[in-house]
Length: 265
Image (cartoon, rainbow, N blue to C red; front, top):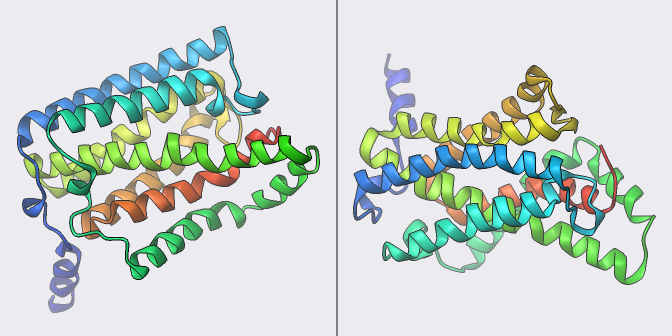
């Protein structure tokens, strides 16, 4: 029993308890964030239908994730710009989600290691070989543009906005109102849920097959839920949003490079 008690006490430890984070109107902000996250699932349906109606791939990308409807409208507008504007209008700054964080050599090292940890998940699956294969089909300026796009877009449409909204805003405010376990569970469910509609409408490959719900759940839902749970637990314990953003960015870099290099996998 003593061992279990010590384990539980260690699990309960938080570097920064939610009570020490700035949340001015917990109940109202939790409601707004939860409703917006639910509406975002509906926006995913409209995005998938828009891409089926008129696809607008960026740089001829092989993935619908880098279509104008998805990358620019669904992610940069609705998951980055709108939440940032709302957050700033409430009087917050990004430093409120990273209390005490500074650009120190130690923190920079943590960012680099977090990015590499995320990147390694796809390297271990052999996706770096696909990048080399795709790069052989381009040269000069065009290759450089595609490589830069593959590096920048995962930060703009995944790493920063998803961690900012689902961990920094949603989970934190739910924790203040409903407790840690409920906050983790609800944020992970909502984070997973918005991935499903577009894959059900459009996916072909490792994320599932369009029209086959079970394959989408297996190929997208389960992996996203696992990653979302890991990130939610790390946020709950360490409150290091920059490290989570870096890790999430790393996870998405190789798939982005593969897509911009025209490889359909």
